[in-house]
Image (cartoon, rainbow, N blue to C red; front, side, top):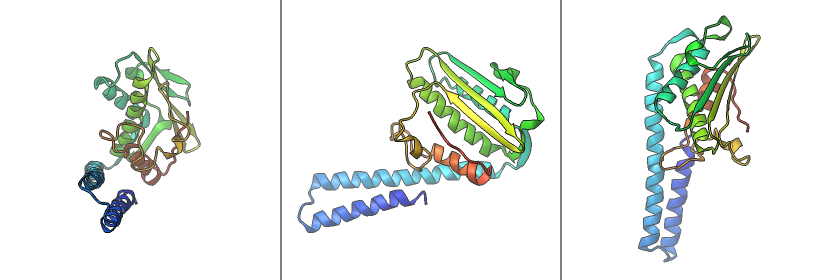
Length: 216
């Protein structure tokens, strides 16, 4: 269904072209505008295809294996720090709520059996990469002097819960229910396709048998 939205829009634009042509209202400027819309939607669909092909091609090569999920968060945070996506001081903390251990230095994270999982590591990395990158981008837009990024790990019976917190700009309440929809983005659309959080939602629900939600 992630193809349906741009296809419906292309069909609608085509209908506008036909209606305005039949009514003698179609001119060169209007036609150019409609063609630009169609090309933008085609490029959007191409980005979807390319993104899903590269993403699933990589994940198919990785088999399920056991690892501590806290270390995935640690490694992704280190990766994003190296990319210098934020120009202000960034405080990070990974917390194991089972043992009440707080790690403010990524190198200090220690393993524990409670957070060992047996899942495709590429899929889990993709989830953390998208979520943590969004947090850092949000922090970079904030006027606060420093950024704060916290990842908390809880476990109740066999259910692991990961809570990600940041002191970024947040999301407008009228948009927060849409952020996991395909193509929805609050960022510059020429750069962002609005698929990152949609892919996260698909992975969490279909491959990790979990759920995901966001709140300010």
